[in-house]
Length: 347
Image (cartoon, rainbow, N blue to C red; front, side, top):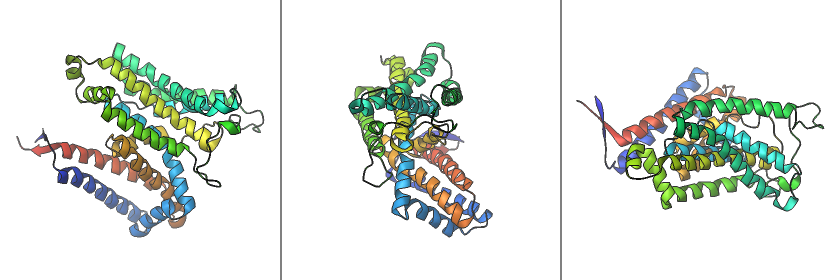
């Protein structure tokens, strides 16, 4: 057996296999629910109700989706150029650190919000710059360097929260001082928890899509991702494209940390991210690396997590079913993507 590439996949093939992937995910989720002793229909109904069944639930889902859109975009941008950025978690925390350093009174009130966003992007970009330079100059595998940087960054944040950035009024808890009012993202509507970080994330998705589809850099990014050797033979500056891709990817992940601190938490703590950087990989892969599709993909992942929390309390089913659902959806979607682009033939 071998895989034979398909030059022009039909519409039925492009839509049919992803639909089968979602159906397979539902079937696996139903089996897991039955093993846990719950009714599958009731379990999925509780997940949907917990994620969208009330105004509060919907807003919580949108809030949870906001950092996932940023990290999903970061991963989608890097993976499109075959730059395997597994370190969005570290870049997220780098952006969060900058948001706190500049948002606790270091800058004048009128400019603190846009400047802190720009510096957070720069911090995230610089965290990824090191691994990509090691890759382009020395051939070091970026999967290893970006993954290990996540742990280095968490230890660095722990040091900061127990030392230089520890809030003296925090009753001994390892957290930073709170941001001033001018450094906080405003709420979309009075009395709602949803902040304008969600709006910035939507704008970022559109901008990234325009970059990839309408600019020379976007074309070079796709060309390098398809075949770096052919792109180099055609005269494209492959290393420069990878560096610029890394800067954009890291900057987007840095915005995730900035939006969580400035929009929701108001301070830095070690539990700022429950794995948004890693979950961004799932979001990007479910979106098939399409920047616009990252938004509904992030909403789907956020709904599974938020709805599973509610479902667990109501039905007594472990919340780990959410992790199983997302892992199954990712595996099935990757397989569907392969079967969309390739056909299995006998030798």
